[in-house]
Image 1 (cartoon, rainbow, N blue to C red):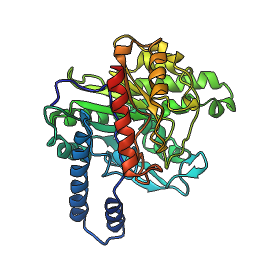
Image 2 (cartoon, rainbow, N blue to C red):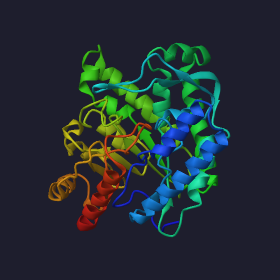
Image 3 (cartoon, helix red, strand yellow):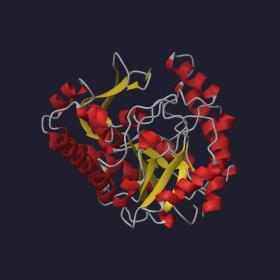
Image 4 (cartoon, helix red, strand yellow):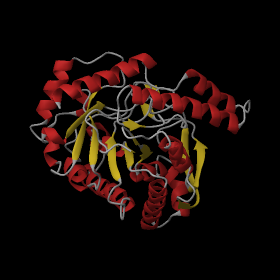
Length: 370
């Protein structure tokens, strides 16, 4: 394992474009044309190739690219005991596009025993060396809670959990189980991916509600408490960060707005080591909310976009890094794309070659700044 841990001065969020033969294998498995063992073999082969490319690109973090998942979040949720896979009659509605229709439903008491992602991590861990750290990305606990109350999902949720506090405690305990099992498997870097904060930033979403300011604050504090409960008693050498997202599906987005509405609660209150933050376009607002980031927390600036193959201007990115340094010390700043390249298996609208050019630019800029 590398001598340092995340975040790294040049970094990435986690997901990568799926190779065509992996997409084909997953479709074949869904249609019953190949066995689970056949699919796993192909996944293993493609993950092995991906990790080799991550190392060749000079990065200190390795991931499985989320190659075993359909979604960045739901597959993990389906791995809990007491949660099952359902299909709705519609997906999430992004800017000009609708996603596929997967979701979750409670079928019993939630717990995190024998979660399949632990075995997924072990496969990546074997490739860790003196220059790299194996990272496990998972959706934040608050994201699971939010999905359980997505539209009509809440009707089923309250049948199993009429006591909301019991639900919060069970989700947190389930996460603590998975975190402990990942740690036992050798994991020292976990990233919580979290779109709930992005929605809090979206003024259009909240403007139509009565008592919007009070509701936003109460909901945000509930989500913060849940995330922090899941982090209780974590080992001192386990680095946990969070990535705040506004949606990333086929190069489209879901929410818009700067961090100001939640900056003090999120940056000042979440017990993580660092924040991976979107700043790739005007939807993310200014750097000013970073004034709430404590001196012992790190910020990864997502200044390059994974939604487009167009390479950013190096000078502009460097200038923006120094703008952010007015609010967070330069030594506590890091650089990455704003999100992964394929939060769902459909992927964003760029090629594999363009994906790696984007990451080469991240590294090039970072080495000039730091």
